Image 1 (tube, one colour):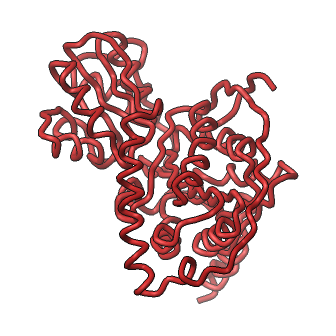
Image 2 (cartoon, one colour):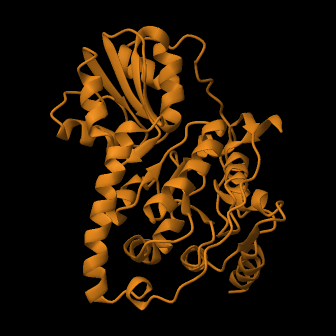
Length: 360
């Protein structure tokens, strides 16, 4: 026990371990790979790579149906592959806690797309967690399993590249052993026929209403007091950037549970401040919801939809000033295309293909 220095990915693995996870499956891909690698070091967890993300999630759902706490890990585009079981799993529900971790990649450091997977939470109708540092990653992972079991629903857990790979001090805790429930054969529950899924859909909508109430009450969504002239609504790594820029010059609504969003708390926050900035990477996911509540905010008309945010960009575009001590040094690295990671099983295939092309 005590504090140790962990990356966000290592902290996610530690959180899953402390939560009593017994099964973890995934498919490698930056920035998510180290999560399952770290989980494999815990002998209490059956951690294994799958042939693809869909298979990984299907194994995890099967384990969760049987009452085991289970975790699936993948990068942003991997959730496209796993979308089929994600949508059906949300309707069927789970017995053991079930968390699906998506590691998004703002800035396209190592991905085909810059997709914002927060939209999957809305589309699949599952709750969403977003940590902003390693300690939160560990703590929220444990809470995600509790929410999943309480509402018998799979949970989406969104990391991003900077949170995945940044390191911070993390307070360790003990593992909670969760004995599995006895599997009960229930065709009406676990077979996705149209007749049953009509019922499941209605049940799922009720779960989301309960979760929205919890979203307004949970300590994961909190107001951090400061100057009331400026309000900042933010989540994930954008919270860290915003704190560097505004400091005590703003009051913050820091969101860690971002679907369903806490409409009542957002309205209450808006009454406490004069002007509101919404600061988030990529799509205006939070901003659109806040505007739909009738609140005027400043956001994506000044901040980019593409790429990562940083403190200097936020200070310049929102305040027209330099962020003291946060300047980004320009580095002119030698340009090179991305390569397959060392040990990647695809390397041999591409090597043979390249030899074939040479002889054509």
